[in-house]
Amino acid sequence: MSNKVALITGSSRGIRRAAALVLAKEGASFIGVHYASNADAAHSTVREIEALGAKSVAIVADLQEGKEATDSIWHQFKTAAIATTGEPWLDLLVNNAGVAPAVSLAHTSEAVFDEILAINLKAPFFLIQALADHIRDNGRIINISTGFTRVAAPTHPAYAASKDALETLTLALAPEFGPRGITVNTVMPGVTETDMNAAWLVNSEVRAGAEAMSVFSRVGQPADVADVIAFLASDKARWVTGQVKPER
Ligand SMILES: NC(=O)c1ccc[n+]([C@@H]2O[C@H](COP(=O)([O-])OP(=O)(O)OC[C@H]3O[C@@H](n4cnc5c(N)ncnc54)[C@H](OP(=O)(O)O)[C@@H]3O)[C@@H](O)[C@H]2O)c1
Image (cartoon, rainbow, N blue to C red; front, side, top):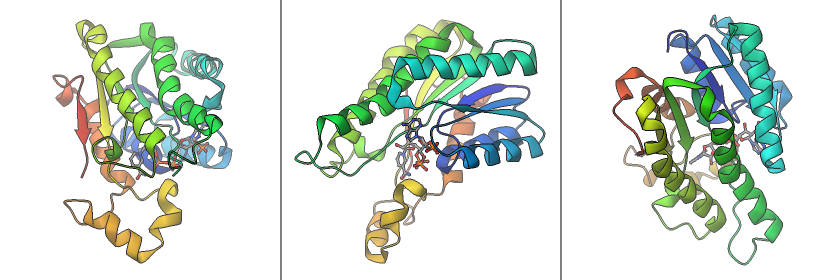
């Protein structure tokens, strides 16, 4: 990652905070930390990145606001990149921001369905579109899906469907970026210890069920997922594209 420029959405906490720190440790020079509501967490991640020697900027946008939000992210990031690196380019985009409300078919209102689709699918689509011409050759686009696209998840049907569409988008875009050496991949985490799951992982019986779902008999940690992102972001993964990388 030496001297690479990265933008990670929803990176103020959870999985991508860990990813941002791994990328900074591996030499990234400038990392955009996007957040929606948690400004304190975002600025704390920025400080942690800068303590590791990289430059960083916090970027705010509510991805429920559609293309206006993704255009705003790109505008904020480009302005900061020019001020910091002198150039409007980036090497890595990680589409990490996501919401996963546990709502069954019967309890999914149209508003909740639209929110899930807007944040988990529409935002990655239009963010990739906004910065496509500014990703340097041999760059990386990494999306984040979920194991719920591989096991039946009646508790989260809209969430599972939104992430399945993101995996299909990954495959569809790989040929578009391939000629420039840019890879497009998806990481598919299993249950991971983040705020998203904090409320239900405190129940020891439920936690045991989550642990039993993993071949490693434990809940994943943000660093487990961050290391897979770092691998896909590295030159070692240059021949991997259009793929979904499961994490068990
Ligand atoms: N944790 C798991 O078990 C698990 C498993 C499979 C897949 N995933 C996926 O991994 C990704 C990261 O999840 P996580 O576990 O790290 O969750 P998390 O701790 O809840 O973080 C989610 C991130 O998404 C951002 N976000 C939420 N609503 C947003 C909105 N309206 N606009 C912009 N950003 C918004 C949040 O920003 P703020 O901090 O500003 O609120 C936060 O940084 C998600 O795509 C999730 O679907 C997680």
